[in-house]
Length: 385
Image (cartoon, rainbow, N blue to C red; front, side, top):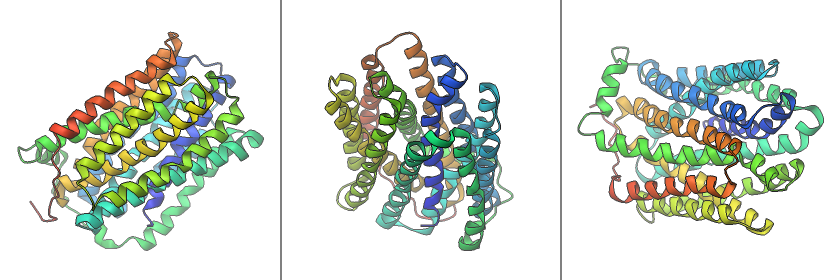
């Protein structure tokens, strides 16, 4: 479970950004469009990092590359505390995103290489559950630390995660440092787009796009949306902390269902649950319904992400697994970029929150169709191809 911290660190960073956004909006007098750009720029960096480091892990060894991604993420967060305007903030967030985007595909590849069958699927979901722990940590920092000390000292805390590279270096086996220096990016991309893997690459890319579009669009803006709906800022932080705890049982149920029914059926159930949550949030007319629908969103959206983490590595052979995960998640990062930006622009144009949430309902309907009619539930044998 040493690698579960990769998800924890990423979630803590994304969670803190969602809490920081209302603060820098006030500090720098940002428009909704500028605030949407702040959320989007990180995911642009993640898109680049996913492809780049996924390929580099296949070529130069996964242990080496995951340590590098963690250092990029941690050191850039230290620089974030020194920014004086939104443009400096966005430049640093772009660099942070490169590290974050590379970290998760490489970590997932290492887990996928270490297990097989149902155990591999369960382990990938369980390590992905550390995302919920990271979000809870971010909520605690935002609720207890940030109101007293401000957002700059809070992000300095996240930069201390660089020290964790010493743990990774000690505990990760050198078996995960297999190198293939003859491999190049063109060959790796050609492999995942070959007739054998093309269908998987297309379906997984679309599903990652939808899941990240929904997740980042919703959760980066959720505190701001709650404030717009009449919650005070401090209450929205505490509320988000409560809903974060519901992410864990979402992961655990998904892991339990993995050896009971097919992974496609589990993914369908979780996408449908997310759709219902988004619909109820969009039409909620009471605080109780806002809370209930947000709990559903936390439970099912993060569970769907975990299921995708479990399914994606199994669709590719071990020699190109990092590239396969990195590429499909990079396409997902396009959705993660569009989601926050689209909400920011829509709010700036005075589009109602109800209409905005129907963006996500439509996307999830498409995801259900792809899952049902496009995706195959393959499990690649770990051999050289």
